[in-house]
Image (cartoon, rainbow, N blue to C red; front, top):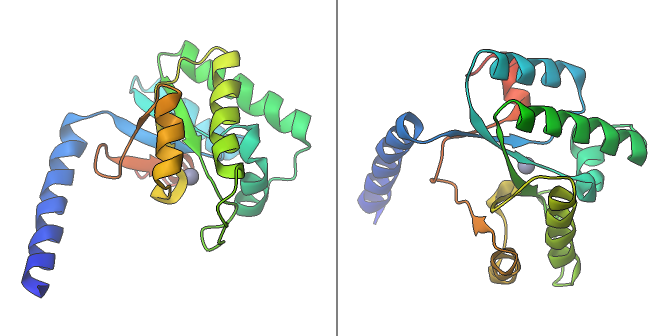
Length: 177
Ligand SMILES: [Zn+2]
């Protein structure tokens, strides 16, 4: 069993290297309200590169506050990220949906309607603001069959961990790419 596991890790490693070379980079985007991250993002776009940006929406403000220490009011946050996502789209970048169903990774959430509502409201916000989304990445790759069904009913394909090479927007500050 152990050998099989190791072979699997080896296989995924080489597969992922191939994915990185051949498919668009994807960026899980949750910190563009921060000016240093935004500056790095503009630098990336300015260098002529293209990526798929999976972006959080104001629906995930609770998560953004908890994870990034954002202290913006709701209006200011929405205005800031919307302007920046629009700028990315105007500069040839693809915008798609990134939704965190929970505030913290470790948080247990009993089955409720809330996760489904988060997906629907996020997608509605993106489409209302002019982004033609047809893909979604769930935060921490964490979702269940119900969430997948909701996403698919909205015409979205759920992107999986090995589909594309991925980074976070804040990784760009460190110059990782
Ligand atoms: Zn995320």
